[in-house]
Amino acid sequence: MATQSPFLWLEGFLQNLPLPPLQPPAWAVDEVRRRVVLLLNHILLQEKEATNRLLGQKGRVVHLQWRTFSMTLVATPAGLLDLAPAQAKPDLVLAATEESPLVLAQGVLRGDRPAIRIEGDVQLAAEVNWLVDHVRWDIEEDLARVIGDAPAHTLGQAARGMAKALRQFIGGTMASGSDKATQ
Image (cartoon, rainbow, N blue to C red; front, side, top):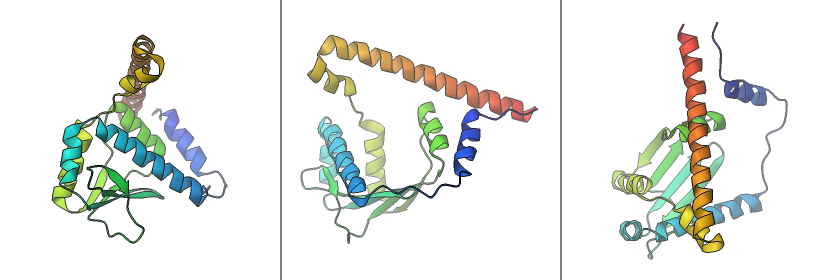
């Protein structure tokens, strides 16, 4: 008898609910986009090589898409990112192909990259790939500025421990579900 992951059951249950699709107000979506740009720029500023690489892409436009959420970014003359004007034609389109938020989250927690459909400029795609591979947010450093080094380090260790345990749980759940399904 095959056992499925409880996450798959939950996703199926949520998809079959007779609820109208919830759409956040336009102002909220716009505000989330602006906050994401601020966070990305904060992270980019921690890595000088990242801003140098973006300087070479000045004015280039990247459109990001997942389900109904999309965001169009432009590289600025400062080597950072900004929201592109609505009429901007993207040089590169990156679209996540996985529709299920639960499956996508499981993959990310396992450390897998989501499947991406890439359309457009190959050189710009290579630069984006370099940024994804080499730029990391040192959240512990940012937290230390607010609460001090020792508490930030303690919280960082606890978060890493929880993430490791969650990855092991997700990996174990997925592995045991697939092992039973093949028997």
